[in-house]
Image 1: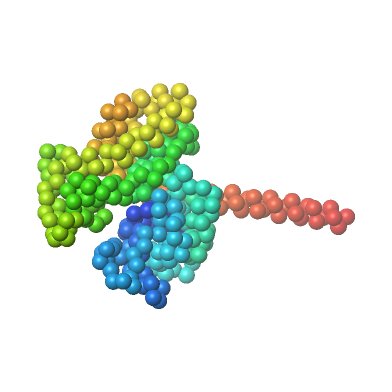
Image 2 (image 1 turned 90 degrees about the vertical axis):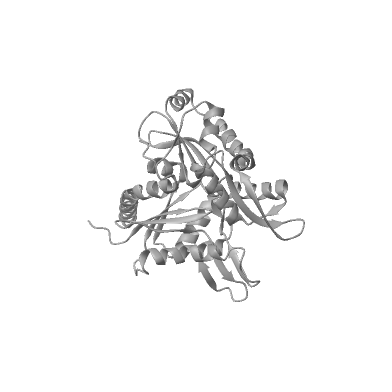
Length: 349
């Protein structure tokens, strides 16, 4: 039977939102930013348009990133942003959609309930959650039903999710608040301390991307504001120093990987060292990340194809589970109804 309601997959990340609609593909891919007028509370811009005014807005205009470390930090802003993106994805359809949203493995029950509540208020008919580690593995093409263990490392904007997957489930996992945005702040702080230059986080992100795609022997032209005289100052930043700026945060990810491996069953650890670890997420291409993991842990590392889309692709593939979950729910309701009818008949006797 054809599904009347739209089934939608959402990667609600700290730095970006991706939305996949069944039979349409990815229809939204925008930054997780919302601009508000503090005087009236009106939404001025969302996504790409809001990001353009970050750091450039007037006193009454506030730009908000509603999610922090992969979970809701500003409930109302998250709800309004999600509602905007859902309406954009569905063209304001009258039928409320069913949603499948990925959540970091470190999310508490309270944080998960907040996410479910926000999606309901934003216009969802029913919302399901999938763990980010599992979604990224599916999106990277990992055979999650395989009894052999697979190590998947998803480096997002606000968090890094590490998971050992076997036989269709996450065996051990960890999630730490280190990701692309943390790398950006580290680069920004490095330039302030080493060169006395102030730059914004958007410029720091540009430096990170340029360094990750350039030669390790090259340099990047950086213009910022001098701390000493407040005037514009230009330097040429060696790419090697970009890695120096983010190395401490990369090592935090490696420490978390070590902790996951330490609590994993020996048989699965053996599997992990016999096959490459899979790097996914927008931060997978970060300068020196894959190389340092390989050097420190002595395991092969493979960067997935289209790493920034792995989570949304995996969540989209898992949309097929919604129908089976609905069938199970309907069967459970029918069984409960039969049980109640039987009890009522016995009572009447």
